[in-house]
Length: 216
Image (tube, rainbow, N blue to C red; front, side):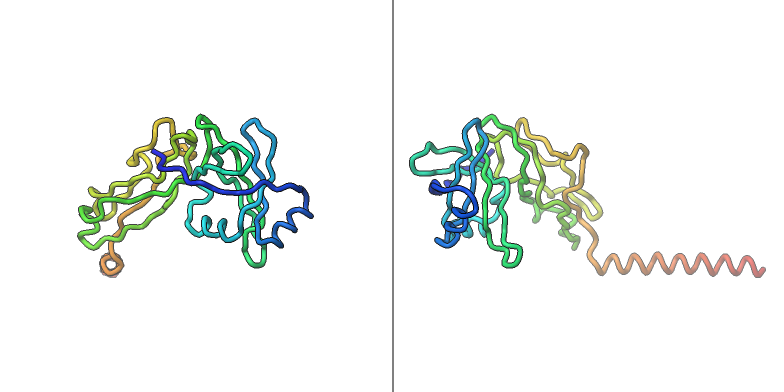
């Protein structure tokens, strides 16, 4: 289930509108808004370097945070969007949504693969390809997993791993309503090339035989 919820520290922003947002950016802060949860929207500022550190850590848009704002009660939030400068790609605004533990949300959860050493397909030289390194789930906020575990210890070359092979938290379900592929184990490039040559050779032999029969 969900691991320890990380803190996200911000400060309340006294002004609203473009003027206040520009002032915040001049002070090396990133303006944002907290909404939802049956409460009024709360304008906030986040320290620029502090936010960038969280963004570089990854999964910022797919994890639960404990938002701490002085003068306000702590609240669980999830980031709904990070707006960025179109030229430099730097964060310019953040939208956070309040969540109750019973709230249902849709978010992407990374897939962790185990069983590499035991996988017969990989032991024979096969290559693991991740088709979906992340899976979008509809899940209860209080049960958001840090990752999903995919066990490939039984996969042979040519096998695929689908979402049905992954254990999901109680009440969680994929947003795609079918047994979609997450990963596959394919033959190494050298073996694939050899197989292609064999197929081409067999095809040429078949054509030659057909021509011989026609001439006779």
